[in-house]
Amino acid sequence: MSGVSISVEGARKSFAGCEALKGVSLEFGAGRMHGIIGPEGSGKTTLLRLILGLLSPTSGAARYFEDGRPVAFESLRPSLAYMPQTQSLYPDLSIQEHLEFFRDLYGIGAADYSRKREELLSITRLGEFVERPAGQLSGGMYKKLALMCALLRSPRVMILDEPTTGVDPISRRELWDLLYRLLDQNILILVTTAYLDEAERCSMVHLLEGGLVVACGEPRALLEREGAGSFDELFLRRAAVRPA
Amino acid sequence: MTFVPARAGAVARKEWFHIRRDPFTLALALVLPLLMVIVYGVAIDFNVKEIHLAVSDLDQSQASRRLIDTFSSSHYFRPRPEASAALATADLSDERARAALIIPPRFEKDLLAGRGAKVQILLDGADNSTVGPISQYVASIQALASRRLAGVDPSPPYQLRTRFLFNPELNSRWFVIPGLTVVIMAILSIFLTALTVAREWENGSMELLLSTPVEPIEIIVGKAAPYAALGILATAFVYVIARGVFGVPFAGHLWVFALGCLLFLVTYLAQGLLISVLTRQQTIAMQFSMLTGMLPSNLLSGFIFPIASMPRLFWYLTMLLPARWFMVISRHAFLEGSGFSELAVPFAALALSCATMVALAARSFRRTLE
Image 1: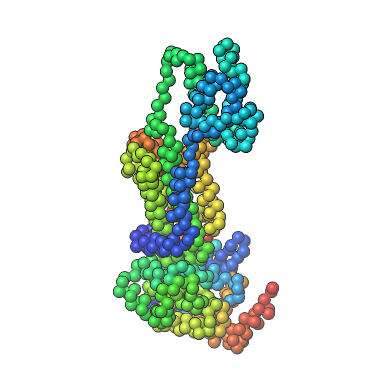
Image 2 (image 1 turned 45 degrees about the vertical axis):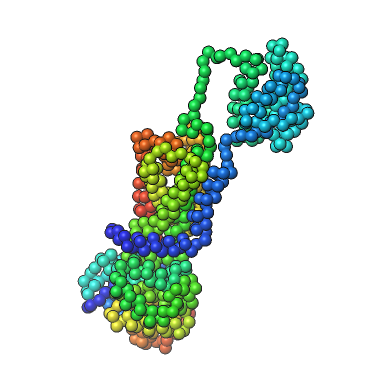
């Protein structure tokens, strides 16, 4: 199997007595887009942070593989790109300054940077706003900038935490188009989303509830198995039977 | 763990953008040193001169006039005649005078009769900062007046001749301004760096930063570098003002002073970063930096209040303060021309503080959100 794959085995995570993950085991196969969906507080962000090494699991582990062979997380770190859910850019820095900052952090050469910069500015159509500070960008433009910063060095794993939250429908579609382009480059994409219609855009969906994985599979197959017409319907049905 | 200078440079460059665009940081970095030099160098003078002396001369004799003349010719006192003792006392309470001299009606007669003439001096005990120096002036004027009133100048069996080394005129500015470098560097380094990492946590940018290949040590070095440059600039500014405007002599070696500056700067930058890493919130970081950096460097470093007269517990506490040791280095470098051999203890203490603080800051910075 070529590319990077990630396996999470029995991951538990507690915060001050509250268990956010209660033994999650998942396989994220290479070159696919994995959607992690679930209601608020189901443990989606915690799971991503464990995979990124930003949190240590209370028990269990995340394991990483490159072309089927196990690799250490540290050797994979330079190939990981992350787009956090919260606003994580610098409001006073312009688009241009952000790109230069991440270019230097990732050690991208001048020629590569120049080519990638032009390509990303063209795809995101942010070229005419390069001098504008991030704090003055619209929600959609801000998310595109965050994505550009993540994609600047051609990652092999892309992890996005609710990338389309607070973004208008046109920008949402553009963001998804951007992600689809990445799949062509055999990149593993993990994405959480609050918009359930977006779950159907993923190659695999993992449904989290109360810190547990309750369902997994390809979107259509999963819906058929659960007997639901859409993820909206599935969610509403599960919410109705879930204890308050 | 590897250290990639380009990554540290990227963090430093980004931090410089923040500094340039943040009015609060800019004001603190540029205006504060200027303001402190003006306040401490021009407005505040610990040398008490031109003391208004309310004089009630109820004797109006040659002896009483000679006594008053002894006060006025000292240049420390400016006599202000009053008709009665009550009016002279009222001058004190109304703050028209800081001392009162009351000469009773039979002063000259008692003096000539050898009956031990008495003169009263009243000082404003509520003004603790001036009462000490004034009473010292009064004591020396009394000795001089005694000889003049007796009309003789008997040679004492021995003479105690005092010469003030390093600062012959006891110019308080010579003493205060070299200390200002300590206070200004402490404020710039601790206060500003304490906010910088905390700001990343509050903005949510730390999560993104930690997911990149940048190492904690590169973040620390990159964040500290612009503030170090500001600290060095502020010190150079104070040095130029001290020498050029206030005429403070610099008797020592510039590189001894520069090494002291560097050690002190790194210590306080590391302390600021440590505070920032531990608190993760700007308001708490600000309070901690006030409590552990600014207040001790003002109050317990010997800048204004002498360490030797502090209670034993505080005296020992000052041993832990880098500001105390750098204060010694700065003043000795400026006024006494001391070298490494004379300053071995302050340098050793400062180097130890520096190593401890850098180690603590580096260890406390973790690459996780926990």
